Image (cartoon, helix red, strand yellow):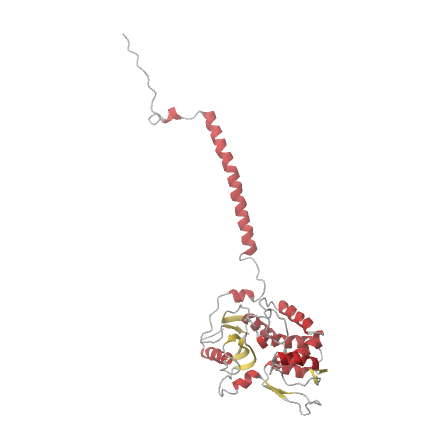
Length: 342
C-alpha cells in the first residue's frame, strides 16, 4: 500500500531564493516605478545646484569690488593702540592703502573735516584764485547763531578767493566756506550737491554732506577711511597741499584790514604748546562739535614716507587736553620706532 505524503507550504523565510523570485514581468514594472519616482527628484537637485552656482558667481570671489578702497577697508586691519579716539584710519600714501585703524568704516559726524572737501571743490571749480569777491553780509547772522568758527573777515569785505581758501582751512572760517560755495554754485544747497557728487566720484561710500562747514546734522557724516582717501586725493593738488601744510597766512590788504591780518593753523597752534614734539606732522585740519568730539586729519612724514591719519570722536573739547593731537603724536612715535610700518 502506497502512503501519500501531504505537502505543506514552505516557510517563505526558509524557501530557497530561486523559489522566491518575482516573475520577470512584475519585476520590470517595479523597476520602472522606482525610476519614475527618482526622475523628478533628480531634476529638483539639478535645479538647486544650478541656482547655487549662479548665486556664487554673482556674489562670490569673482565679483569685482564696488570701489577701489572698499575692498581695503573690508580687510582686517591692525588696530592703532594707545589712542583716545574710537575711530581711526592710517593710510600709507605710497601704496594708497589703509595699513592700520579701528572702526574705519563707521559713519560719524566729521565736524570741520568737512572743509577738506569744501576747499578741494573750490580749488577744482574756480579758475582764477586771485579774483576778488565780496563776503556776503547776510551769511553772518546764521553763523553767529550757530556759534560757528570764523576766520575774521568782515561782512561785505572784498577779498581774493585765495585768501578764503586759507581762511577756511587754517582757522576753520565758516564765512570763507559759505562765500566759496556761493561763488562756485550760487547757493550752499547746490554746492552741497556737488560735494556729494564728488564724493561719489571718489568712491566715498560712507560719506554724505548736508552743508559745507561741518555743522551738526543727522544726515551729515563720513567714515575715517573715506576722509583719509579724500585727503590723499586732495593732497595731489598742489594748491591744496600748499594751503593744508601752511602754519600761517597773511591776507591781502583791504579797506577793512589795511594791513591784512594773519590766520594760523589750528593744529600747529596746538602743537606750538608742545615744544620738541610733532616734527613729523606736516599739516593738519582739526574739527570739533559736541557730537563729533575732537577730530583731526593730519599728514605725517617719517623716513621719507608720507602717511595720512584721520581720527574722530576723541573725548574733550577746546578747553581740555587736545586728545586728537595726542593721538597723532602717538602714531608718529609708533611709525618712527617701527612698531607700525607699511
